[in-house]
Each structure stands twice: as C-alpha cells, then as structure tokens.
Length: 145
Image (tube, rainbow, N blue to C red; front, side):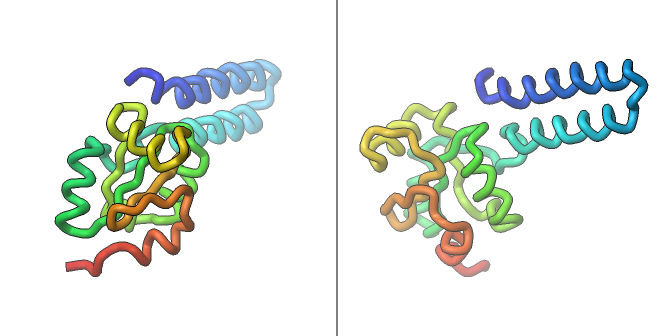
C-alpha cells in the first residue's frame, strides 16, 4: 500500500526542498513555478488520478457480463498515466486493476506478458493487449446506455 505513494511523496519533498532554496536566494517566482511543477508531477504519479481499483477476479467477472475492458496498471507507470490522460472521462467506464495492490492482477499480467509485469495491459473480450493506443481502447468500449 505504501509503495504506491513513494514517488508522489518524493516529488513533493524534492520540490519543496529546491523551492525553499530558491526562495532563500530571493527568487520567489522561480520557487513557485518549480514547486507547482513538482506538485503536478506528484499528482500525475499518484493513484488519485485513476478510477478506483478493484480486484482482478471481480474486474474480469464484470467485464464478462458487460463487455467493458479491464486495464491492469501500477502507480508511477508513465505509459499508464498517458493512457489514463488520453482516455479522459471515458476512463471511468473501464475496470482498473492496480497490480501492486492485487497479486491476482499481477499474476494475470505476468501470464499475458511472458512473465513480465508490463503495464498497461488491457484485456478485451478475454484477450490481453499490452500498451495499446488510447483511441483503440476507446473504440472497445460498449455503447453508452
């Protein structure tokens, strides 16, 4: 649970330290800009920007019922963040599984990727797709009800 917050916390701490140094050098504008940059990095790499994760078994069960894709991801993954941001509000219509919180999810990703925990891995209709294009994932969503 704690390791998902390591990168965001490090971003905040490093940004605060560097911004403090700049502020003490009487460069408040640069300090504020740098601090905002580090806070943005912390936010993007935190699990807060992702929809609530559920377990792999539950996600795959729900996907079989309603046809929605399942996205296996982990905090700090640049490709996962990119997929999430490019999907926009459509990301909430997917099932998200954090492989650092769910051992069954990590096992499913390893099974799909020759033993590697390569994310994002998107499962559509029972078939895994590693690091797919966001446009393709959007096309796999069932029509809105």
